[in-house]
Amino acid sequence: MTVAACATRTARTIAAASALVCTVLSGCASVGPDYQRPVVQTPATFSEQGPWKAATPGDLIARGDWWAVFGDPVLDGLEKRALNDSPTLMAYAARVDRARAVAGIAGSFMSPEVAIGGTAGRYRASRNRPDQPDKTPNNRDYESNVFRAPLVASYEVDVWGRVRRIVESARAQAQASVAEYQTVALTLESEIAGTYFRLLQTDEEHRILGQSIVLQRRGRDLVATRKAGGLASELDLTRVETELALTEAGAEDANRRRDDLQLALGLLVGASAGSFQLPAASFEASPPPIPIGLPSDLLERRPDVAAAERTLMARNAEIGVATAAYYPSFRLTGGAGFESSDLSQFLQPESLIWNLAGSVFQPVFNGGRIGFDVARAKAAYAESESNYRGRLLQAFREVDGSLAGLRNLDTQAQFQTTARQKATRSVQLAEIRYRAGLVNVLEVIDAQRTALRAEREALSVRGDQFASTISLVKALGGGWSQRAAAAVNGPVALQK
Image (cartoon, rainbow, N blue to C red):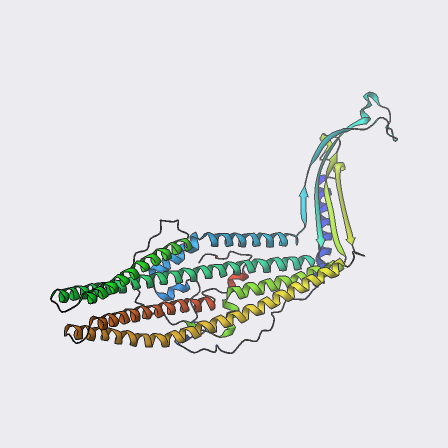
């Protein structure tokens, strides 16, 4: 028989065994429960009504760059820079790669394991062994060569679906890691947007204080002139100068807070200390209305909810892995190659070797270990299910809380606008009355102090509106879609 014929015969044997394995597997179902999403009662609509617009199926927050709704090019650049340079995101991206690799390792057990090796050696047998060889010249029977090149294959026949459940669990964990990455990315994006608008708010506050300082200095000069003419007292001038000094101190405090916010923003975007600078900018825009969908949309839009569900799927598959230990495991092994004591005859048909074997292993007694492991898996599933339900309740609460906050802030902003207008008019009237000698300087100072407080409080309300808008976008899941977590076997755009 030729080498080719021997190889063909061996290949047919292995093919027949593989066909048998496939036939067995096609009729077997995986043990353990198949995953079904837990039934969670969701409200038909959110309870809050306010200054936002209802979402249509094509009118949800844009997938990807959700911060673009604010229409600020500087913010756009900061967000994209952070997605590329943030060490925190890089660490979570590495976690995704690791989870994908684990899923790949688990999937590899669905295929046979094939290995090839080679051995070349020489050995000598003992002359005093019981089975002495025939005496030959030079005692060559006591020494010999060995040359071996086997191709070995092994395969666990996944009759009960243990390996399939392991793969199912690993893929779900990989999907959860993608969703966790998106959760961290959404948190980072929200922090950048919030810090950026607080910085703009501080710049605006500094501008308001600067304008007030200019006016107060003019008032101080007026009082000083009146004092020189005997129309005002030293006490009046001291009071005006005290109010001016307090306003100047407030401006310096705004400078300090701006420096802190700029440092924090640089850290968030991954910039080194001292290399990140943002010029002062105006803060005149109003927060945009955010499209609101149905509460059930949170199942699809929130990455933390998707991560909790993917973890639940993995725990469900682990029940099947633990249950499969009750049943016997089957393994096929085989090999083929050449073996000879003479290198010149190594590839001859007579040197061909092969083997094909099957084994079965059935646990009989292990002190209840399998039962305890199944109970552990079921308890882990119950824990993950509770976490999933809790995460959903938290999501509904966060959205309703953000909606309520925006509604209250919208009403507060209207009152604050009225208060600012009235306070500005009061300053004008007080200054006119003071110049006419009808009131003392205290009335002017009080009017100026009230107007400045009204300006700063109105600015604070507007800043809170931006912060609540960002919180609402985050509560709605930003621009994420759970479809991104499902494609763990292909490329997933971690950085938008």
